[in-house]
Image (cartoon, rainbow, N blue to C red; front, side, top):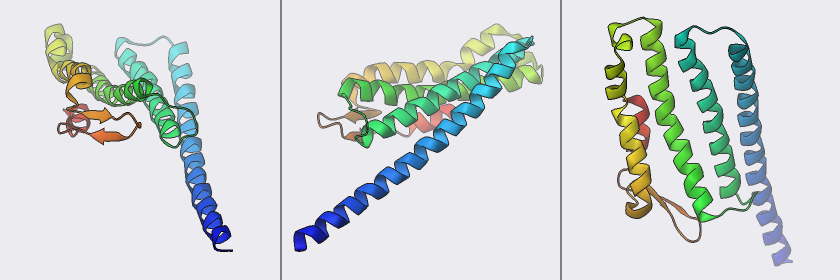
Length: 170
């Protein structure tokens, strides 16, 4: 009788995890659908140059939400996971955040037609944090400075993990 109670509680907890995951996936899918509608409306129109940044931001947001959703599904065991795929998905998630922040910056600079946006060298130099993040992701496979994924697919934050949240806002 005791085993039945423990099994029932275990199954109830498992069901709650899957319900939360289902809600998470639904919200992400709704977000992706809304972003796809915006993207399709933008792509069909003749865009002024600054809108290219906007369209790229929307496309990157779709990729970011997709990476996040796949990561959560792999982490929950809904879909099979492999270490290198986990690494690529998580790296893609954080890198898209950084590039999205940079693209929004370029969009607003060009929308306000600042002198900064007219000077190509300033745009190249302002991407320094994007370049730094790409380099950190590449060397992260050896250093684990940002994060590591163990053999058992357990995700561990590295000592420089906070940079992945700081880069999008710099």
